[in-house]
Length: 341
Image (tube, rainbow, N blue to C red):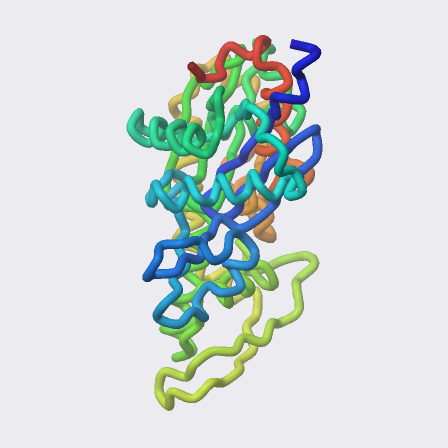
């Protein structure tokens, strides 16, 4: 195939609820929010990714913004297909002469059903892929972190994304036991919206809540390097007039407490299912955290206190899964756990 190599484009896609990343030629070429803006009358796509995100919550009645993925799986088939197509076009916008054959590796949550798996494959094929391979997110995260997944050694990976938290114990190139819960970054955001409404009588949108999470989000009420208080603007529910209040990280830690507890329960449940020999390995190696949710301040310390195990955050946790997917793409023949046709 050497001569026709340029006719085949190999891309790795981390299709996430919050963000979609595409890696091509070992480089992250697309890193955009998973959101599509559409014209309601014609059904035509107006914007994809960051441009659509800027419209989110600010549209008039002829434009709607859609997030095609919910809880890590495709909820709106048509929009997902249009989003994948649009993002693939972003890779090399200048090329119009011919379209290369696409070979894709896409990562999926470990708790996905056969029907949901099929939806991902069909969307990729409609977007122009000739070969589609699927890889489970915790496995991709482990490879991306730099763990040798083929070793007879147990490693526990927790990937906290936008829609799902994936907890898996990996050994010998396979997932030994896993727990996939549909509680993750999006739940943190909705907790913050709810807290602002209940506690401060102020209505904030999803984008503002996301901003609060990034600026002052915390898992513990006591931090060594606390962030400065953050100014939040929204609508006063009593008067209906826009207003501004200051929010501290302690308040947000309090708001997120219940949701983080559910993630901790799932981690303990996964540890209970782990075979004893692998438990011995995990005691030595500890727990690895990946995904955007793992960047929440103090989350590693909180999980470590709960499990009494060392917790390591991957470097660049947002891109760990995408990196692992890209490595798997280069070694398709080496990794038997890639699901494809």
